[in-house]
Length: 364
Image 1 (cartoon, rainbow, N blue to C red):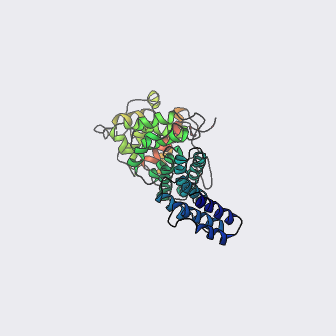
Image 2: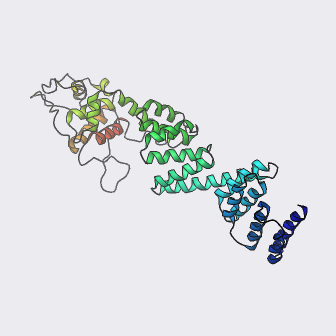
Image 3: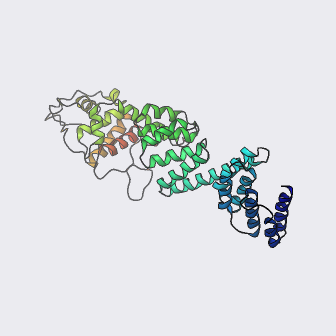
């Protein structure tokens, strides 16, 4: 009724002026249990300084078509810094009162909340808490399913948790931005799909500092997938045997074959080996000599750090590369020999020497 509506307006006006007793008295003129009286009562309490956001949201949900209730819930929730509640209310208010400016406010709240969640999630991930980061990313996706940053954070967290399958499920939604392409490549790597990893990394901007190292590594792994099984065994070996080092040197230095101009050695102990051709190549090139008198290469001998160093020095000379500079205590920018030579460390050193001893991605 008009008189009751006037009483509501008078109650709120009295509260705005600080006369809460008059406000409560006026509200008695409105039927108890009526949504308008319930909303006005919450407004009066809000003006009194009480926290009513939770009750405002409950009221709005109980009368889902009451636009003013949703609008007040937005105000109360924002006042109490309840961004999630404010966003929920603003979205509903925008549906019921499209000309009330609630849509614009909902978009602002969505952006702010998403940014806050992503900032928190990134901090958690950097702090070594991938589960917490994933929770923030999923919450951000609930707020804004189209937020690329939320999907990127979720994939990073899943990779940190080694949940490759879940990460792969999110890949189709990643953008083709530098971060998105880098993550697509990382997931492809984790799945062993090196051809896809190469494709993704190659599409990153040329000036992206991550591109070169990841592209070089992915191309190398792609090449290794087509390598003979004995090479994979050599890379995984610890300690490394001489036949394995011969295979690694021949594989990582394909130019060595053109330098193998020496006499063909006769090593009786390598004839049945799969690595026999590689042994002949490194021996003819003078990189890994055997015993020409005894006609033996000693393929099962363990490679010592000293032998590895000598092999790499000869390799550099044959290829016309700078001589390796070995590290002493406290040095930097040098090559460090492992205490126990394994396949991975030997391959990394062979790669550095055959490539000139430098970083292939270093600025020239």
